[in-house]
Length: 389
Ligand SMILES: *Cc1c(COP(=O)(O)O)cnc(C)c1O
Image (cartoon, helix red, strand yellow):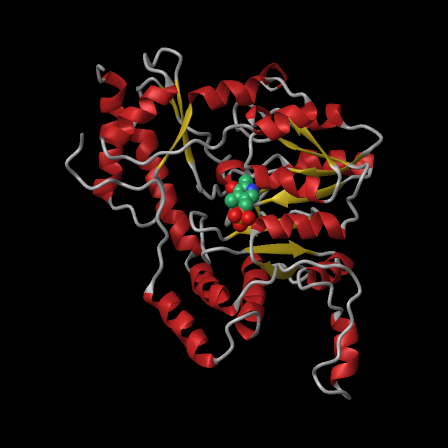
Protein backbone atom coordinates (compact mmCIF):
# COMPACT_ATOMS: atom_id res chain seq x y z
CA UNK A 1 0.00 0.00 0.00
CA UNK A 2 1.04 3.59 -0.58
CA UNK A 3 1.71 5.76 2.45
CA UNK A 4 0.94 8.90 0.46
CA UNK A 5 -2.56 10.41 0.33
CA UNK A 6 -4.86 8.94 -2.29
CA UNK A 7 -4.74 10.84 -5.60
CA UNK A 8 -8.37 11.18 -6.72
CA UNK A 9 -9.39 10.40 -10.29
CA UNK A 10 -10.97 13.86 -10.64
CA UNK A 11 -11.15 17.09 -8.66
CA UNK A 12 -12.83 20.40 -9.54
CA UNK A 13 -10.75 23.58 -9.64
CA UNK A 14 -12.87 26.25 -7.92
CA UNK A 15 -11.23 29.66 -7.45
CA UNK A 16 -11.93 32.67 -5.27
CA UNK A 17 -13.78 34.46 -8.11
CA UNK A 18 -16.28 31.58 -8.30
CA UNK A 19 -16.73 31.61 -4.52
CA UNK A 20 -17.20 35.39 -4.39
CA UNK A 21 -19.77 35.25 -7.21
CA UNK A 22 -21.75 32.53 -5.42
CA UNK A 23 -21.69 34.56 -2.19
CA UNK A 24 -22.84 37.63 -4.14
CA UNK A 25 -25.72 35.57 -5.52
CA UNK A 26 -26.69 34.34 -2.07
CA UNK A 27 -26.65 37.91 -0.72
CA UNK A 28 -28.58 39.27 -3.71
CA UNK A 29 -31.84 37.61 -2.73
CA UNK A 30 -32.16 35.96 -6.18
CA UNK A 31 -30.94 32.37 -6.01
CA UNK A 32 -32.82 30.55 -8.77
CA UNK A 33 -32.80 31.25 -12.53
CA UNK A 34 -32.33 34.98 -13.10
CA UNK A 35 -29.71 37.52 -14.16
CA UNK A 36 -26.67 35.27 -13.63
CA UNK A 37 -28.10 32.38 -15.64
CA UNK A 38 -28.83 34.89 -18.42
CA UNK A 39 -25.29 36.27 -18.22
CA UNK A 40 -23.82 32.75 -18.30
CA UNK A 41 -25.84 32.01 -21.46
CA UNK A 42 -24.62 35.20 -23.12
CA UNK A 43 -21.00 34.58 -22.08
CA UNK A 44 -21.22 31.00 -23.34
CA UNK A 45 -22.51 32.03 -26.78
CA UNK A 46 -19.77 34.70 -26.90
CA UNK A 47 -17.15 32.09 -25.96
CA UNK A 48 -18.17 30.05 -29.00
CA UNK A 49 -17.84 33.26 -31.02
CA UNK A 50 -20.78 32.68 -33.34
CA UNK A 51 -23.42 35.41 -33.22
CA UNK A 52 -26.02 33.16 -34.88
CA UNK A 53 -25.97 30.77 -31.89
CA UNK A 54 -28.20 30.95 -28.85
CA UNK A 55 -27.32 29.25 -25.57
CA UNK A 56 -29.94 27.75 -23.25
CA UNK A 57 -28.79 26.98 -19.69
CA UNK A 58 -30.15 23.82 -18.09
CA UNK A 59 -29.55 21.88 -14.87
CA UNK A 60 -27.72 18.98 -16.58
CA UNK A 61 -26.52 17.84 -19.97
CA UNK A 62 -29.01 14.99 -19.66
CA UNK A 63 -31.79 17.61 -19.45
CA UNK A 64 -30.28 19.41 -22.45
CA UNK A 65 -30.17 16.25 -24.59
CA UNK A 66 -33.79 15.50 -23.63
CA UNK A 67 -34.94 19.05 -24.47
CA UNK A 68 -33.11 19.11 -27.80
CA UNK A 69 -34.54 15.79 -28.99
CA UNK A 70 -38.01 16.70 -27.71
CA UNK A 71 -37.85 20.04 -29.49
CA UNK A 72 -36.82 18.32 -32.72
CA UNK A 73 -39.96 16.20 -32.51
CA UNK A 74 -38.47 12.80 -31.65
CA UNK A 75 -41.19 10.49 -30.34
CA UNK A 76 -42.69 6.98 -30.32
CA UNK A 77 -41.86 4.94 -33.42
CA UNK A 78 -38.69 6.92 -34.13
CA UNK A 79 -35.16 5.57 -34.02
CA UNK A 80 -32.09 7.51 -32.85
CA UNK A 81 -28.59 6.25 -33.63
CA UNK A 82 -25.76 6.69 -31.14
CA UNK A 83 -22.54 5.03 -29.99
CA UNK A 84 -22.51 2.09 -27.58
CA UNK A 85 -19.32 3.55 -26.10
CA UNK A 86 -20.88 6.30 -24.00
CA UNK A 87 -22.55 7.13 -20.71
CA UNK A 88 -26.15 5.98 -20.46
CA UNK A 89 -27.45 9.59 -20.38
CA UNK A 90 -26.73 9.91 -24.12
CA UNK A 91 -29.22 7.14 -24.85
CA UNK A 92 -31.70 7.22 -21.96
CA UNK A 93 -33.21 10.52 -23.09
CA UNK A 94 -34.35 8.83 -26.31
CA UNK A 95 -36.30 6.35 -24.19
CA UNK A 96 -37.86 9.23 -22.15
CA UNK A 97 -39.49 10.25 -25.44
CA UNK A 98 -40.72 6.74 -26.23
CA UNK A 99 -38.37 6.46 -29.21
CA UNK A 100 -35.86 3.63 -29.73
CA UNK A 101 -32.09 3.66 -29.47
CA UNK A 102 -29.95 2.05 -32.16
CA UNK A 103 -26.42 1.52 -30.84
CA UNK A 104 -23.46 1.27 -33.20
CA UNK A 105 -19.78 0.44 -32.83
CA UNK A 106 -16.82 2.81 -32.69
CA UNK A 107 -13.73 3.48 -34.75
CA UNK A 108 -11.01 1.62 -32.79
CA UNK A 109 -8.43 4.35 -33.51
CA UNK A 110 -10.42 7.29 -32.13
CA UNK A 111 -13.04 5.49 -29.96
CA UNK A 112 -15.58 7.82 -31.58
CA UNK A 113 -18.73 6.66 -33.36
CA UNK A 114 -17.98 5.07 -36.76
CA UNK A 115 -19.84 6.93 -39.56
CA UNK A 116 -19.92 3.81 -41.74
CA UNK A 117 -21.77 1.98 -38.94
CA UNK A 118 -24.15 4.92 -38.59
CA UNK A 119 -25.04 4.81 -42.26
CA UNK A 120 -25.50 1.02 -42.16
CA UNK A 121 -27.90 1.36 -39.20
CA UNK A 122 -30.30 3.79 -40.93
CA UNK A 123 -33.86 2.49 -41.45
CA UNK A 124 -37.07 4.25 -42.57
CA UNK A 125 -37.73 4.97 -38.85
CA UNK A 126 -34.41 6.75 -38.23
CA UNK A 127 -34.87 10.41 -37.25
CA UNK A 128 -31.64 11.51 -35.57
CA UNK A 129 -27.96 10.83 -34.88
CA UNK A 130 -26.34 11.65 -31.52
CA UNK A 131 -22.54 11.61 -31.85
CA UNK A 132 -20.43 11.89 -28.70
CA UNK A 133 -17.09 13.71 -28.78
CA UNK A 134 -15.45 10.96 -26.77
CA UNK A 135 -12.85 12.05 -24.21
CA UNK A 136 -12.81 15.53 -25.81
CA UNK A 137 -11.70 14.44 -29.29
CA UNK A 138 -14.23 15.70 -31.85
CA UNK A 139 -16.24 13.02 -33.64
CA UNK A 140 -15.99 12.95 -37.49
CA UNK A 141 -18.66 15.61 -37.88
CA UNK A 142 -18.15 16.28 -41.61
CA UNK A 143 -19.11 12.71 -42.38
CA UNK A 144 -21.91 12.58 -39.83
CA UNK A 145 -23.46 15.83 -41.04
CA UNK A 146 -23.18 14.64 -44.65
CA UNK A 147 -24.96 11.37 -43.79
CA UNK A 148 -27.65 13.34 -41.95
CA UNK A 149 -28.17 15.63 -44.94
CA UNK A 150 -28.40 12.71 -47.36
CA UNK A 151 -31.02 10.94 -45.25
CA UNK A 152 -32.88 13.96 -43.84
CA UNK A 153 -31.86 13.27 -40.22
CA UNK A 154 -31.40 15.58 -37.23
CA UNK A 155 -28.05 15.72 -35.41
CA UNK A 156 -27.67 16.48 -31.69
CA UNK A 157 -24.06 16.47 -30.47
CA UNK A 158 -23.31 15.14 -27.00
CA UNK A 159 -20.45 17.52 -26.22
CA UNK A 160 -20.27 16.65 -22.50
CA UNK A 161 -16.49 16.12 -22.92
CA UNK A 162 -15.80 18.74 -25.56
CA UNK A 163 -15.41 22.22 -24.04
CA UNK A 164 -13.34 23.44 -25.74
CA UNK A 165 -12.56 21.20 -28.73
CA UNK A 166 -12.37 21.89 -32.45
CA UNK A 167 -13.18 20.12 -35.70
CA UNK A 168 -12.08 21.63 -39.02
CA UNK A 169 -10.70 24.56 -37.04
CA UNK A 170 -14.15 25.44 -35.63
CA UNK A 171 -15.22 25.01 -32.02
CA UNK A 172 -17.58 22.15 -31.18
CA UNK A 173 -20.90 23.94 -30.74
CA UNK A 174 -20.52 25.84 -34.03
CA UNK A 175 -20.26 22.87 -36.42
CA UNK A 176 -23.74 23.11 -37.92
CA UNK A 177 -25.71 20.35 -36.18
CA UNK A 178 -29.24 21.04 -34.90
CA UNK A 179 -28.05 21.35 -31.29
CA UNK A 180 -24.94 20.77 -29.18
CA UNK A 181 -25.11 19.91 -25.50
CA UNK A 182 -22.36 20.58 -22.93
CA UNK A 183 -22.11 19.27 -19.35
CA UNK A 184 -20.92 21.08 -16.24
CA UNK A 185 -21.10 18.03 -13.98
CA UNK A 186 -18.55 17.95 -11.13
CA UNK A 187 -15.81 16.12 -13.07
CA UNK A 188 -16.28 17.80 -16.47
CA UNK A 189 -13.90 20.31 -18.05
CA UNK A 190 -15.68 23.21 -16.32
CA UNK A 191 -18.23 22.70 -13.56
CA UNK A 192 -21.26 24.28 -11.94
CA UNK A 193 -21.71 21.27 -9.62
CA UNK A 194 -24.58 20.14 -11.81
CA UNK A 195 -25.47 21.96 -15.01
CA UNK A 196 -25.47 22.00 -18.77
CA UNK A 197 -25.85 24.21 -21.84
CA UNK A 198 -27.58 23.61 -25.17
CA UNK A 199 -26.54 25.73 -28.12
CA UNK A 200 -28.40 25.96 -31.41
CA UNK A 201 -28.92 28.22 -34.42
CA UNK A 202 -32.50 27.02 -34.84
CA UNK A 203 -34.69 29.81 -33.38
CA UNK A 204 -37.82 27.62 -33.21
CA UNK A 205 -35.94 24.90 -31.37
CA UNK A 206 -34.47 27.42 -28.92
CA UNK A 207 -37.93 28.82 -28.26
CA UNK A 208 -39.37 25.37 -27.61
CA UNK A 209 -36.48 24.40 -25.29
CA UNK A 210 -36.94 27.60 -23.26
CA UNK A 211 -40.63 26.81 -22.80
CA UNK A 212 -40.05 23.14 -21.98
CA UNK A 213 -37.17 23.71 -19.54
CA UNK A 214 -39.60 25.46 -17.18
CA UNK A 215 -42.92 23.59 -16.98
CA UNK A 216 -44.17 24.55 -20.44
CA UNK A 217 -44.73 28.15 -19.40
CA UNK A 218 -44.97 30.27 -22.52
CA UNK A 219 -42.71 33.30 -22.30
CA UNK A 220 -44.55 34.87 -25.23
CA UNK A 221 -47.81 34.67 -23.36
CA UNK A 222 -46.06 35.88 -20.24
CA UNK A 223 -44.45 38.82 -22.00
CA UNK A 224 -47.73 39.73 -23.70
CA UNK A 225 -49.31 40.11 -20.30
CA UNK A 226 -46.52 41.59 -18.22
CA UNK A 227 -46.62 45.01 -19.83
CA UNK A 228 -50.22 45.54 -18.82
CA UNK A 229 -51.01 43.01 -16.10
CA UNK A 230 -49.44 42.10 -12.74
CA UNK A 231 -46.75 39.40 -12.79
CA UNK A 232 -49.05 36.53 -11.79
CA UNK A 233 -50.32 35.95 -15.35
CA UNK A 234 -48.91 33.09 -17.42
CA UNK A 235 -49.98 30.35 -19.82
CA UNK A 236 -49.07 26.66 -19.83
CA UNK A 237 -48.76 25.46 -23.41
CA UNK A 238 -47.27 21.97 -22.80
CA UNK A 239 -46.47 19.54 -19.96
CA UNK A 240 -42.90 20.82 -19.59
CA UNK A 241 -40.01 19.84 -17.35
CA UNK A 242 -38.07 21.38 -14.42
CA UNK A 243 -34.69 21.80 -16.12
CA UNK A 244 -33.70 25.42 -15.36
CA UNK A 245 -30.20 26.28 -14.07
CA UNK A 246 -30.04 28.20 -10.77
CA UNK A 247 -28.19 31.51 -10.47
CA UNK A 248 -26.06 29.88 -7.74
CA UNK A 249 -24.80 27.35 -10.29
CA UNK A 250 -24.53 29.97 -13.05
CA UNK A 251 -22.36 32.10 -10.73
CA UNK A 252 -19.81 29.27 -10.77
CA UNK A 253 -20.19 28.83 -14.53
CA UNK A 254 -19.48 32.49 -15.36
CA UNK A 255 -16.01 32.24 -13.81
CA UNK A 256 -15.27 28.64 -14.79
CA UNK A 257 -15.92 29.60 -18.42
CA UNK A 258 -13.31 32.38 -18.23
CA UNK A 259 -10.77 29.72 -17.23
CA UNK A 260 -11.83 27.07 -19.77
CA UNK A 261 -8.88 27.66 -22.12
CA UNK A 262 -6.35 27.77 -19.28
CA UNK A 263 -7.82 24.56 -17.80
CA UNK A 264 -7.58 22.84 -21.19
CA UNK A 265 -3.95 23.83 -21.62
CA UNK A 266 -3.13 22.39 -18.21
CA UNK A 267 -4.87 19.12 -19.06
CA UNK A 268 -3.10 19.00 -22.42
CA UNK A 269 0.25 19.40 -20.65
CA UNK A 270 -0.64 16.41 -18.43
CA UNK A 271 -1.58 14.39 -21.53
CA UNK A 272 1.70 15.29 -23.22
CA UNK A 273 3.71 14.29 -20.16
CA UNK A 274 1.83 10.96 -19.91
CA UNK A 275 2.40 10.24 -23.58
CA UNK A 276 6.13 10.92 -23.41
CA UNK A 277 6.72 9.15 -20.10
CA UNK A 278 4.78 6.04 -21.13
CA UNK A 279 6.32 5.63 -24.59
CA UNK A 280 7.82 2.15 -24.84
CA UNK A 281 5.52 0.64 -22.21
CA UNK A 282 3.05 -2.06 -23.30
CA UNK A 283 0.19 0.47 -23.34
CA UNK A 284 -1.61 2.32 -26.10
CA UNK A 285 -1.83 6.10 -25.61
CA UNK A 286 -5.11 7.80 -26.56
CA UNK A 287 -5.28 9.40 -30.01
CA UNK A 288 -4.26 13.04 -30.20
CA UNK A 289 -6.30 15.56 -32.19
CA UNK A 290 -5.21 15.95 -35.84
CA UNK A 291 -2.68 18.73 -36.53
CA UNK A 292 -4.16 22.17 -35.94
CA UNK A 293 -7.16 20.82 -34.02
CA UNK A 294 -7.92 21.17 -30.30
CA UNK A 295 -8.54 18.17 -28.03
CA UNK A 296 -10.44 19.06 -24.85
CA UNK A 297 -8.67 16.27 -22.91
CA UNK A 298 -11.58 15.60 -20.57
CA UNK A 299 -10.28 12.02 -20.31
CA UNK A 300 -6.90 10.34 -20.79
CA UNK A 301 -7.86 6.80 -21.80
CA UNK A 302 -4.99 4.34 -21.73
CA UNK A 303 -5.33 0.86 -23.23
CA UNK A 304 -3.27 -2.11 -22.04
CA UNK A 305 -1.48 -3.91 -24.86
CA UNK A 306 -2.13 -7.63 -25.28
CA UNK A 307 1.43 -8.33 -24.08
CA UNK A 308 1.05 -6.14 -20.96
CA UNK A 309 1.05 -9.32 -18.87
CA UNK A 310 -1.81 -8.20 -16.63
CA UNK A 311 -5.56 -8.05 -17.07
CA UNK A 312 -7.25 -4.65 -16.88
CA UNK A 313 -9.26 -5.29 -13.70
CA UNK A 314 -6.21 -6.56 -11.83
CA UNK A 315 -4.19 -3.63 -13.15
CA UNK A 316 -6.74 -1.16 -11.78
CA UNK A 317 -6.55 -2.88 -8.38
CA UNK A 318 -2.77 -2.43 -8.40
CA UNK A 319 -3.09 1.29 -9.21
CA UNK A 320 -5.60 1.76 -6.39
CA UNK A 321 -3.21 -0.04 -4.04
CA UNK A 322 -0.58 2.49 -5.10
CA UNK A 323 -2.97 5.30 -4.17
CA UNK A 324 -4.02 6.30 -7.70
CA UNK A 325 -7.70 6.82 -8.53
CA UNK A 326 -8.63 5.63 -12.02
CA UNK A 327 -11.88 4.89 -13.78
CA UNK A 328 -13.25 3.21 -16.94
CA UNK A 329 -15.09 5.17 -19.65
CA UNK A 330 -17.22 3.36 -20.32
CA UNK A 331 -18.75 0.01 -19.59
CA UNK A 332 -20.38 0.06 -23.06
CA UNK A 333 -24.14 0.33 -23.13
CA UNK A 334 -24.49 -3.08 -24.83
CA UNK A 335 -23.17 -4.73 -21.64
CA UNK A 336 -25.70 -3.13 -19.28
CA UNK A 337 -28.77 -5.25 -18.49
CA UNK A 338 -31.34 -2.64 -19.49
CA UNK A 339 -29.90 -1.95 -22.95
CA UNK A 340 -28.76 -5.53 -23.56
CA UNK A 341 -32.17 -6.99 -22.76
CA UNK A 342 -34.31 -4.30 -24.35
CA UNK A 343 -32.56 -4.66 -27.71
CA UNK A 344 -31.22 -8.24 -27.43
CA UNK A 345 -27.63 -7.02 -27.82
CA UNK A 346 -24.51 -9.20 -27.92
CA UNK A 347 -20.90 -8.11 -27.47
CA UNK A 348 -19.99 -9.60 -30.89
CA UNK A 349 -22.09 -6.86 -32.52
CA UNK A 350 -19.67 -4.24 -31.12
CA UNK A 351 -16.20 -5.80 -31.50
CA UNK A 352 -14.22 -2.54 -31.36
CA UNK A 353 -16.02 -1.11 -28.32
CA UNK A 354 -15.77 -4.48 -26.58
CA UNK A 355 -12.06 -4.87 -27.37
CA UNK A 356 -11.28 -1.34 -26.17
CA UNK A 357 -13.44 -1.68 -23.05
CA UNK A 358 -11.64 -4.84 -21.92
CA UNK A 359 -8.27 -3.07 -22.04
CA UNK A 360 -9.02 0.54 -21.09
CA UNK A 361 -8.67 2.69 -18.02
CA UNK A 362 -8.84 6.46 -17.53
CA UNK A 363 -5.97 8.16 -15.69
CA UNK A 364 -6.35 11.33 -13.58
CA UNK A 365 -6.17 14.49 -15.74
CA UNK A 366 -7.24 17.81 -14.21
CA UNK A 367 -5.86 21.30 -13.62
CA UNK A 368 -5.34 20.79 -9.89
CA UNK A 369 -2.71 18.10 -10.56
CA UNK A 370 0.80 19.27 -9.85
CA UNK A 371 3.92 17.96 -11.59
CA UNK A 372 4.58 15.67 -8.64
CA UNK A 373 1.07 14.18 -9.00
CA UNK A 374 1.66 13.53 -12.71
CA UNK A 375 5.02 11.90 -11.98
CA UNK A 376 3.41 9.79 -9.30
CA UNK A 377 0.82 8.49 -11.79
CA UNK A 378 3.56 7.73 -14.34
CA UNK A 379 5.56 5.85 -11.72
CA UNK A 380 2.49 3.88 -10.62
CA UNK A 381 1.59 3.02 -14.23
CA UNK A 382 5.12 1.58 -14.72
CA UNK A 383 5.24 -0.14 -11.36
CA UNK A 384 1.81 -1.76 -11.74
CA UNK A 385 2.90 -3.26 -15.07
CA UNK A 386 5.81 -5.16 -13.54
CA UNK A 387 4.33 -5.85 -10.07
CA UNK A 388 4.01 -9.48 -8.96
CA UNK A 389 0.93 -10.51 -7.05
C1 LIG B 1 -21.44 13.50 -18.13
C2 LIG B 1 -22.03 13.02 -19.41
C3 LIG B 1 -23.39 13.22 -19.71
C4 LIG B 1 -24.37 13.74 -18.72
O1 LIG B 1 -24.04 14.97 -18.20
P1 LIG B 1 -24.88 15.52 -16.95
O2 LIG B 1 -24.56 16.98 -16.94
O3 LIG B 1 -24.33 14.81 -15.74
O4 LIG B 1 -26.30 15.22 -17.18
C5 LIG B 1 -23.84 12.86 -20.96
N1 LIG B 1 -23.03 12.30 -21.87
C6 LIG B 1 -21.73 12.05 -21.60
C7 LIG B 1 -20.88 11.44 -22.66
C8 LIG B 1 -21.20 12.39 -20.36
O5 LIG B 1 -19.92 12.13 -20.08
